[in-house]
Image 1 (cartoon, rainbow, N blue to C red):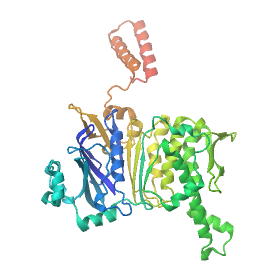
Image 2: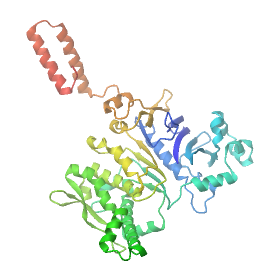
Image 3: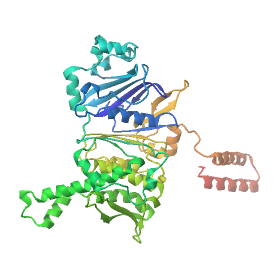
Image 4: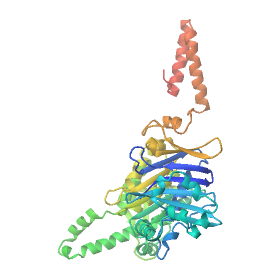
Length: 474
């Protein structure tokens, strides 16, 4: 299940915008999409809207199949419409939502509307649409799936808890970063982790405001492995094996979450002379106990409190660790990962491999990647890691509304080229740098008009000095 496109009308800064998430040659939905644009163009709004919409694809026990989209957030009225096109089981399905008279109306639209053209959108936007639905007249019958066909679609394709479905939304850092309050370890306990055995939801918020849920998840994964190991050792075919054999066999098929987390975290911790202290991690035994696992200096082995880590390191290890733990040793058949500003507070040298890291952690236990990955960024290093057709550029038009276009710079291009071609920044130097460029050009022009040898030597010396300092080409 992947999103092919989204159409938004009359919502905040979007008067009428179409966002295409398909490959230009194959028409298949893309695995990863990057939103770029100026502040206020709606990058975070789109991620939030996708998250809120997908959350309504949640089938809870006893819920009526025709009302699963009934709580789409946002101030909608008769002019505010959202249409999302998805690919489900090799066929396309449309989900339409709009609000009339303070009542949200939602419908799963028939695939045939693709051949109807644009008129259908305006027909559904008519003021009498709600009455049309209630009367069950031909417009609704023509566009909306009903009856057994709808029930089958709902049963087969909506998200379920305790399943291989996964939706993760990771917003940008909040104004009050709760990571800063984690001086010892995030507060939770064994008893809280046990609740995940009863119900493991499909949707998760990865944020500094709920870091305790990450720690609870780690405890759950540790205890789940303990339970699976005991079950493995008690299998009839394993009764006569030695403890050493059993440990070796089980470790091969079921890795430890903290060992894997150490490999992931140490990618950035080692740059600061730190490491994750796996050897001395202490798992809870009593219901009220917490997991104690810390960062330490590599040389002295001195423990470092989490609130003593830099903002960038702390934000990275908790965010990336939480996301990785949600995929760890699970089969994920339908996944969505929405990450807003993954570059926050990270040094540029780490950004060049950041998207590759995300692509690795969303692989499930079978090594498959069935997750559609959405990113919003202001950073050209991040944007350069996407193909031009994977970049969605949001920008203001002359009428004061936001429109969308695709990128131009090729994947892996110099970030300065991405700034110029896709971020539309023709001048990537600061004021002082621009002044020195102008001076560099002036001196070269003056050199061409100078005949005195001593003066030429002076000008050449100044030109070379500026050129070397600012890396200006000859």
